Image 1 (cartoon, rainbow, N blue to C red):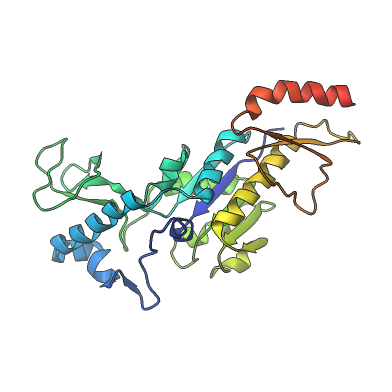
Image 2 (image 1 turned 180 degrees about the horizontal axis):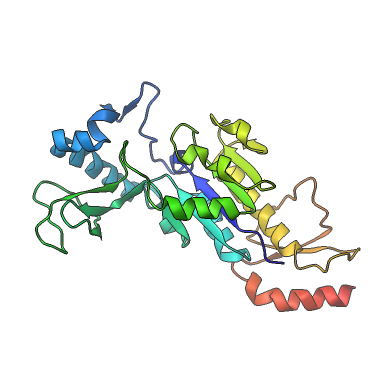
Length: 289
């Protein structure tokens, strides 16, 4: 039986613990700017210099932060768990990328990329943008930040909805539940799909999730990933067998099992070594039984 796939949605809360501001303050302003002045197509047409300056500052701020324990744990989950793990982020920073996540979709775009206003080509762009910036492909078009602004359609929606509709577990981390369509993804899961929210405080759509855990992402996410990896390795135990159950998780230090876990023996392996030791673990199981 194939391992059920996992879809994980992340929002600003996970990056905030690395020191990135979530931009929108309680009064609705983004870094003292109205959303309408810096995050809409109309704003860019009205005052492109202001919009470019705003995103140039956001882009420079990325050099001052690093991926945190939550980013690193999600990358480890993708690397070490059997089956597909798709990470969908609303964040435009590169912290998931730097943490090592590979199966990653930036549904709201990326600060470190620029899009041609003429031919539509997308280019890596770590530096500033201004009115003189030109597309390296067509050499004629101006460039805008590769950001999905309010009023624009998020990226890769077909792939995201397809993955959500067929996943066995949907997890939302650090999301407010205010921004759609991301906030509505939990409503798209198939019947029987496990849904979990991990957040500093319950989101606006928390009632749509079967389980809500509150706390810091840097605490909740590594513990939850350890739990998922334990369950994934538990699947290798022959069905119907009783006695000692075996699991393996990456990482060192303290590992707490979920209260409902029926695992009696926990073997800790160094990060990234599960695949290398799978055959040995299965032989060990056979020896025990």
